[in-house]
Length: 391
Image (cartoon, rainbow, N blue to C red):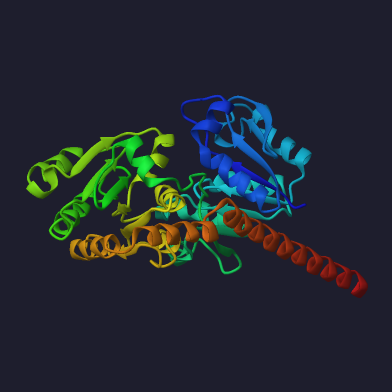
């Protein structure tokens, strides 16, 4: 069985214990278990101030200080010692912004292919590109939610021709469909249609454009209600003013605020349409969760959302900041048979975004990179043998 080590160099600024991190960072567990379900043996190596090893659902977790979080030469050597003990065949590094650590990793584990996974990284400033280029150079592959997201890195000369680019969602979801009527009773959500927003109230998510589109849609959908769950909210005063100034929105938009993650599933089961106006996303965890619940999306037409919705074959896409297009998309989806729409959304999730689907894509990438590395090693050995024969 192929053995992969999924490595995260990010150190929790709050210094939480390993068990707390597994609860706080569900994607750490979900990506590992997806790869495990895909047929790989998975070891997770997580930078952490506290050293601990544990096993859950067939995945081994190793928490230890390394990378930039390492405080002494002894702790800095922990990663090399663990890699020699585990002997993984592929290294899967979470994030693109750890070029220095990736270069050091390649020296610690020569001959082992490295794949980097994007988590909404931007092309670095010019003065940092030389180091990033070295990090990409020593990596055999890099994955994005959408291949289109790799283009800025290619144009900047960071991703070379020999580096394989994969299209893999950041993470699956454990959410499931449920009884909508029961979910509405449990959550108190109402609306025909019932719209749900799960995202920050910031310029990137663009709640003002969404409110403008919703206001126009209400002319055709007078029973529409929008429920907004959010964490950080720098635009909250602007959002509140926009709602208060519009009679159509005043009693139909509900600012719920921060909600525990486990309650999001019930809210998504209760709603009819998931709406978001992001200008940029690495993937879209809330969109993936919405699809898992059978919630039809009406989201902005950006690369990651385009890929997650099958090019808009599920729900509808609309150009960023295009209020008229958003209104038309909302009306179009709202007037389709609800049961059919929910079934299509969940079927798409099962095919493309479930644990099985994401795991299959991950392990296929791992195997291809391993085969390419074996091919390179074999060709190198043949060239060496030829050189000896001529000598």
